[in-house]
Length: 99
Image (cartoon, rainbow, N blue to C red; front, side):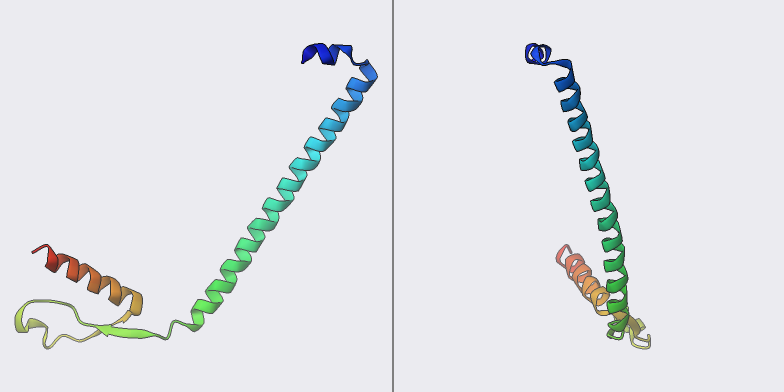
């Protein structure tokens, strides 16, 4: 490979190295611009998702704290998100299956 470079005239070699450097800088600039656009698109999507989720916060279910005997008959129900209620149910069924 070096033998081929030695056979080129000095002007041609410096011209090709200059083209290579310009191409490298242009590629780096393109990647930099793409990453900046990606960051701002991600931030914009985060803002949009938060705005959408604010409208859906009204769905709440009630869950009672599990316990033994009659001690929880007088306990009040706590407002819990639907996802949290599902997670509690899964955890309780897992614990009961291990007994």
